[in-house]
Length: 233
Length: 341
Image 1 (cartoon, rainbow over the protein chains, first blue to last red):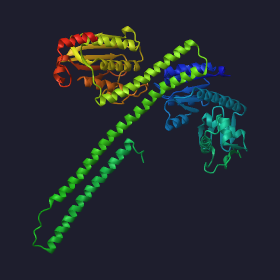
Image 2: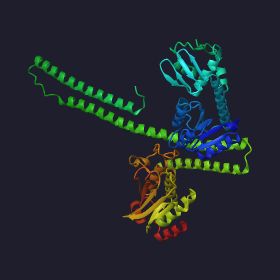
Image 3: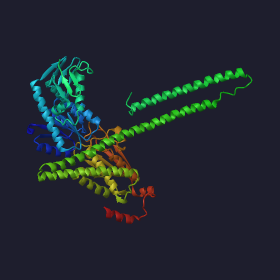
Image 4: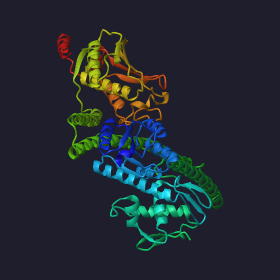
């Protein structure tokens, strides 16, 4: 499976890039290395990639800018930020700009490989799910799961891939109670014991986008002590 | 309200405090004048015979002096606050840079160790990985040393090993070392001009200076590196012009680059590595030798020139005879120098 996946590695530290390239190649991925933000964008526009591993402190164009530009062209591209900057502000900024995951340096090799595997798995699941049902409407909202564009009553927005995946999962389970644990396991593909508050943050965002009154949700209802339930009517 | 600690927040506080002060001054003058009139009127009514003795200038002037002093104090505090804010900003930059500089080689070393520990690696690759780890360990060592050296330089704990060297031979020797250390082509650094004089320097300290300047030239150059060192004497000084073909320095930044923790950020900067300590350390070393360093640049993509001025030996001794143990006969020094080079 890995042999089909092509990774763009954006890292200015040569010693680290060589080691990462070796390990990713050993895992069966095809790796293209860009040593600065400018080269990364040129490669991204010229070639097809399945995932991007992105450093933040890069010459010419920093990682945040790269992530932003990648998102503009390809909303579904999985981006893993791998950075020495581990502060909360940097993490939040990276995730807000559309990165799907954030791993601080120094990191454990196995953890990095598992995260990459998980991201590619999620991408595959989403691709399959979106091809079965590429568009969906509820209330005054229309969602295109292929380009992640949404038309709400008042505006037009573009979801991040993670938001789209949460929404897709809830829609697929319409009328059923979906627990936080279930979402973490099936959307994030992570251990549910780690963090379930992340789910709440995503639900808040979805309510803000789609609910007429986010403080009194109609579509994304909280089920006390259990999780959430989506209801289109 | 603006974020506490931001520059605009402090500007706002300063403006508000100045307004408050002006209002206070106005109230004080109003209070004084109105009370003066009341006292005068009451005095005249109660006892017309008493001669009212002038305007009582002292409390009036005293009050104004007090208020002006408060305003002056506030301005002084504001000035110091600005300096502190600037230092804090530089310190934050330093912490961010140092974090990057420490974590990057550490990540790389950890990655190679975990790789060697977790999967079979061909012998050839193992050797490559070990070389990479050594390179990163060296980088960490240099970083730690540079921080410790700065600290020692600032606290004047470094005792330089001053010796007398013929400048030509000293520079040729040091440049050869730089070429080998940075693995540069032999013709990438050339020395132009000859000077027939001597300088009293710490060879290792001057080596650090040349290493830092070369490292910067490499980091901030897109093209293959070309360095030209021009030598000349000017009055009682040796002038060493160290020019590179790098991206240059904007004229507005020429003075700042020698400040502690200072780094230039921009879209045309080809390298993000560094701590902002290199040129500061260079400046401190040159200063401790009784010399000075300045930077010149024609602008972006026009390269940079660092001009180092060092006192010629005789002048140096005259100027710093109290600072250095120079009661050695010159002949002995020359012999010592020849042994050193």
